[in-house]
Length: 266
Image 1 (cartoon, rainbow, N blue to C red):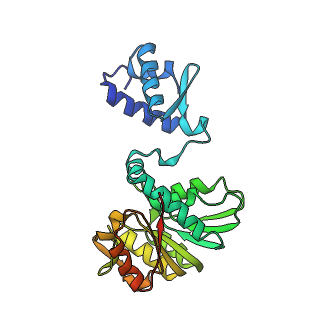
Image 2 (cartoon, rainbow, N blue to C red):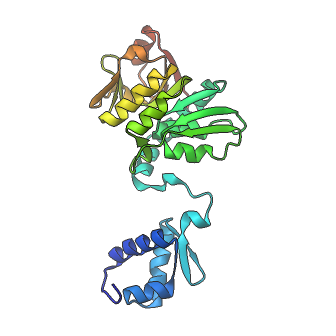
Image 3 (tube, rainbow, N blue to C red):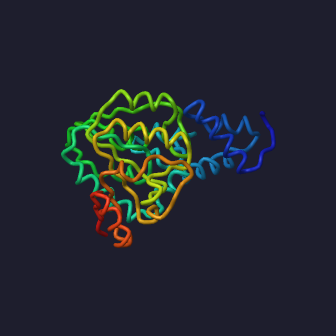
């Protein structure tokens, strides 16, 4: 590879591969590998630092999370785009749900951008056990000293930053909790809760079966959407936490079925 000609973006990708493998690298090492000047390599490292991927050091760089303990897993661009979509509504839903479950001592949280907002608003002094398949939720709650976090493990889905599959399902089945909080790809009165694929649907089913109460957190755009795979009928849902954009007549339909509806305020 030494002296091999590379284009700038391709070189950045390969530099990141090297840094991920070795955790740190020097300018001289990269200059020798790519046959580039030190100035060019330093410019590459500045670009990677501006993207939040590395931290430059004197004469080199190291992987960002090694230098910055506040580095967040949700910097993943695919996940970040989901997190930012309907962010004010999700933030409000997260606050409302966290307040509602404040006295629960054992909670399941599935992965998702809305459930992450629930975790973000947990009382930092609260003593509770949280079982989750969400990597970002684990990362969020690690700063809560009184919160016991159990991660399901399983097959990691990079774009979701979450675990699913048989291992995750088996872990969930080992526990019995007072409530489970689930995000929704789709929720309607006729089709119930739906998910985009079988793996996520199966894990949600396991969480519902392992809990006394099922709480759905969903912004108003999800309340008229049906995803590909059924999870459960509407009668399995006890609480719906949504936002101010939901139509009142729509919410009345849920209330008529005995579902407790919480509308988060802006």
